[in-house]
Image 1 (cartoon, rainbow, N blue to C red):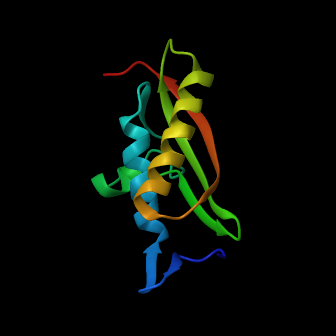
Image 2: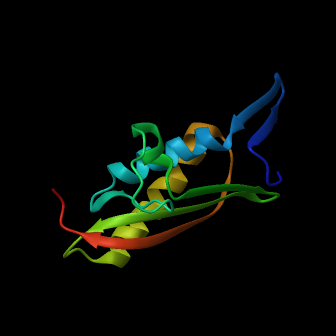
Length: 119
């Protein structure tokens, strides 16, 4: 796999192509369901984002020969152990992406961009 906007997997029945955006949607959905995650942190500053863009904001998906490299920026709830929340996010994202896409995950980098009280 190489850095492109889509990733492909060959099977005995043919080829399956998954866009990076589809994988980013999975990553964003799984991350925001994790305990302690208030939301995704965007790189676009304080612009208003469409609902679809809020889930994928701050997520990078890259393919390599040994699997997907995923980077995501999150906002964590104030008062929680940041390392534990990040480890849970990393583990759950890797598991769900592999389960839903069939593509191996080489690494998941979780960047904590902010800490806030949940609303």
